[in-house]
Image (cartoon, rainbow, N blue to C red; front, side, top):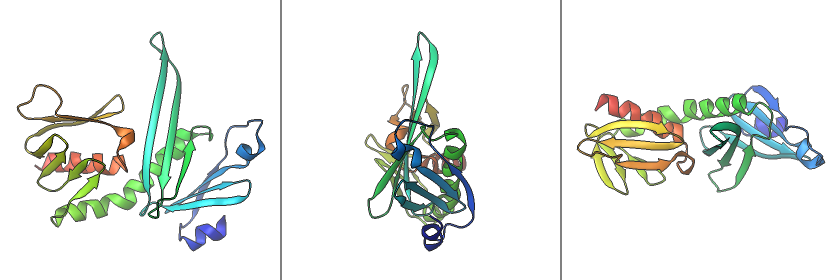
Length: 196
């Protein structure tokens, strides 16, 4: 694990998380190792994959289950993709998922947000699934809106909501789990909306 982390230049080790105990040995042997610049996921056979925050794509799916209006459980799955298309899924079966999930999200934002800002500032555009963001506005399957026209950039029950000037209903809605590197896109849109 340390050799793989060193080869990928992941930096200092920040913590290791194990799954909650099960009756399956292979699942119990899995580990999630956090580093300054990325993560390593390992199994019974050793390291499975290493991901650098500045080069990975992340999808996050969170599901809350309620019975009679009372939240009974939460489920969270992160899917990490390499530039070559290989992927690993990690879910809340790993202990302390609130802690490691927040650390991974923040590491990815810290690594990718400055480059995203720079791309947009220099006139480029960034694509996040069916959203395209540039310094003038956002393009969705419903069309293009300038940042002046965008009145709302929010998350409502796991759905990204964009409100547009002159529309009564939400102009665009997309489930957050479908948007790659969602928090990079979200923070970028909120910043551009404030500036626009």
